[in-house]
Length: 309
Image 1: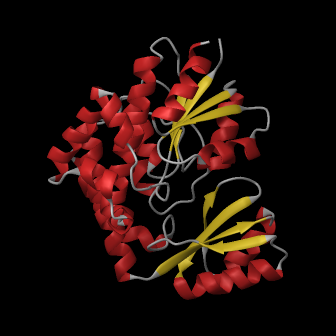
Image 2: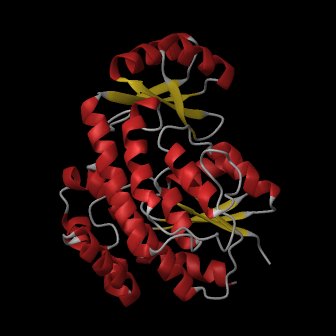
Image 3: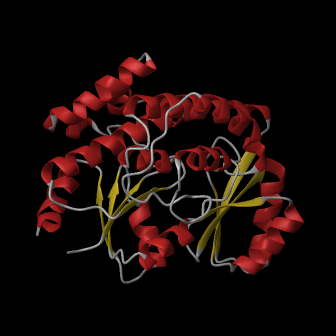
């Protein structure tokens, strides 16, 4: 039996039309969008299906939208592959919330509420203090640590040994990009994001999230969920809450997360949600692992025979 982990997409993977054909093909998926719309107070399915992309990209809309789309992908996968066992879950940034929902830590409605509040708080933090992010390719971590120290920015996403995202004040990100290029980076790309995610600039958002989580019931995961902050499996519910608050300002340890799964014997990954970024990152970290992405009916139909084999 193959040892499989399920991973979930993060912010930035959104596109107009996401979740539409899954909702039309599977009543269980449509039900998730309907339930989320009741919580949110607007028609989420319509927003995802029709856009505009500028509206979906706003953090307070984007985070619930990607969560519900990813949850729909996972629900359809479990419906068509009921015998497939999952050894663990993880998600990139926002996707970690989807992983916690899939592992039974918190309810669907509570996850929607958390992500609406988290997205709004992060959007407010972006407006209050302009920040940015730059992706750096082909520069080793010791060299990047020097760049961060000199420019006054932080490593936000350690996506692979070849790709690391820096985050901080907008003017400092411009400095960091020049320093990285001078240090020998193969490529740098300033990301089209609203602000400095996973950096100290998000501290006001973390404080607001802590207040939201205080009154919510968290349960122990039914399967390991690997933490973005530690790269290790989450523990008890109180610890999960604390780490999910810390996650807002901390680096995403994606390399450590995949290495953790590898140490658990995971050899196959199923990516659920819009896009297929995670499958590409996983391949760079663990060249022996196989992965497939489920984001619509076509990719679901392609994955099901392989998973059920």
